[in-house]
Structure formats: structure tokens, C-alpha cells
Length: 180
Image (tube, rainbow, N blue to C red; front, side):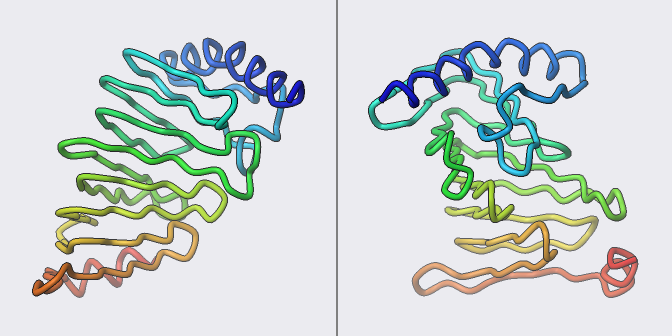
């Protein structure tokens, strides 16, 4: 239990540094690399914050903005689970809608999306958009009940809801251009 308290105390102490880095547009390496997957800091800015040490969760409520190296998520409420376990670390965002933006490091292309709920699996580096999900990459557009976007592999899987279908608009020249 004291180990968990140390991690939470470290997080609380590092949060102002992360938020000031977010405000300045710069990122600093945190002192405890175990707290962040792949050593990339996650800056979270919100109106309110609640920490549940026993359940290892942190909840942010009100105008929540999450930034991690080219990834931005904006939501009404965010729950971060398993903060010190990088194998299970997960960020779940709720909103009406939750907005997602990713700048692809390989070609600086922008992917945006929105849905009722966004789950960011930090270690796997994938984003799950659930509930009226939409994903945009230039003029390419996917609408579905659930969209899973694997950021590392640049793969998208869309699954329709009950009695629904997946709708896509694809511009072939743009798809070729994105893979460059």
C-alpha cells in the first residue's frame, strides 16, 4: 500500500509540472518513468480531479483535455485506471461528444474523430471510439457504432451497431498519399 501511496504522491507532485508544460506547449520528462507508457508524459487539464488510492483510479471532470505526444482528447469526464501499471494503463473519456485528434508522426497527417466514449489503451497505443463514432483522415470518413484505431499499425476496424451498417467515404488518391 505504501508503494501505491508513493506513486499517487509522485503523480500529484508531477501534475502541476505536466500542466505547466502543457500550457507552455513543451513536454518535460517526468522523474518516474514507470508512470507513463513508453516514457511519454500524459498531460491532463480539467476543472476537477478525484483520486481513489484504493481502486488505483484518477477521475477528471469538466472541460478535460489530455495531451500525449501528438494525441489530444477533449471530454467532459475522464477516468484513468492502472496509472502505475503500464501494461494495463487505460484512459476512458466520456462526453457529448468526446473529440479525438492525432498527428501521425510518420507523415504529419491529422486524424480526428468523435464519439460518446473514447478508450485509449496506452500500452497498445490504440483508440476505441464507441457510440456514434466518426473518424476523419483528410476527406476520408468512417461512421460506425464502434471504431478501433491502431495508431502504431495505422489500421482501422469499424463495427456497426445492431441492425446498422458501417458507412465510409474513401478518396483513393488521398489513401495512397497517406501511406507515404
